[in-house]
Structure formats: C-alpha cells, structure tokens
Amino acid sequence: MKLRSLTIALLATFLTIQNLFGIETITINSPATTDVCNLSQITYSTTLTGLKSGASYSASWIATNGTTNEETINGVKVTWGATTTSNSGTLKVQLKNSNNVVVATSNEISFTIKSIKHIKTQTTLFGIGGGVYTIDPCLSGTLYLEAADILVPGKGNPPQEVFNWKW
Image (cartoon, rainbow, N blue to C red):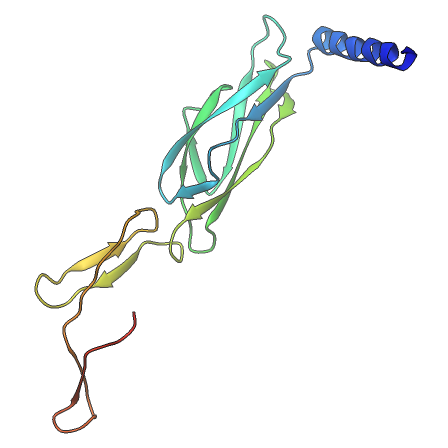
C-alpha cells in the first residue's frame, strides 16, 4: 500500500511539473499507410501537448524526397516524388517558440514511394491502335494486353510462327 501511494504521489508530481514548466511536444499522427504514390499530395496532422498559454509557436517541416506546403504547427501537405536514386522518403517536424528556438522535434516517419524503377514505365503498343501505354504502380486493377502472332526470323522457310509465350 505504501508503494502504491508513493507511485501515485510521484506521478502527480510529474504531471504538475509538466504543466508548470510546459514541456512542449509535437507528434505526427500516424498515417493509415506508409506507402505513397509518386507525385501524390497527402495531408498530415500533428498532436501538440504542453504548449504554454499565450505563447506563439511555428513549425519547420522537414521532408526527404517530398515538397511541403501549407505548413502550420497543426499539419502540412506533402507532395512525394521518387528520384532516379531513391524511392523512399521521410517526414518530421520541429516546433519552434517565438524566438525561433526549437523546443521539440517530432517522431520521424519513413515512406515508400510507389514507383517502378523510380519512374512510370511506358510500354509501346503496336498494331491496331498502337500508341504508348504508361504502367502506373499506383493504379489498381487488371491490365489485359494482347499481341498478334510473332514471327521469329531464321526458323524455317518461311520463318516459324510463335503463338504462345510468357510476358
């Protein structure tokens, strides 16, 4: 019983000190997924605790392989972009006081930017319709492609026709 009373007293003291001295914290709310599409824009929000009443704060958002806009202490919009060398990104935020001093740094979240070889792949189509089809890793569903008979030069006279193959 003595240990329980001591624990409760210590916890109450800690909470009182935290409220008196305003230990500021900022946390990025966990997104539903850490997989993002190349060139997609996603909004992230924060949870703030321990802010001093009447004080003013600002945020400095830091994104790797992402462009931030509409930055506030409550959230940000990030446009993710894979590069030829990376298909991953990170996001964190620093909370600053009115003197522009960092008082808290958030958790850092890592993201996988969905992209095929870091760019959208293009497949050239021949025959009726022709054109170029862009394969986007962020589109869901089934893609049906069809090809006419393929002639393989050098296999018989006339060349051998091929009717079955694997993509």
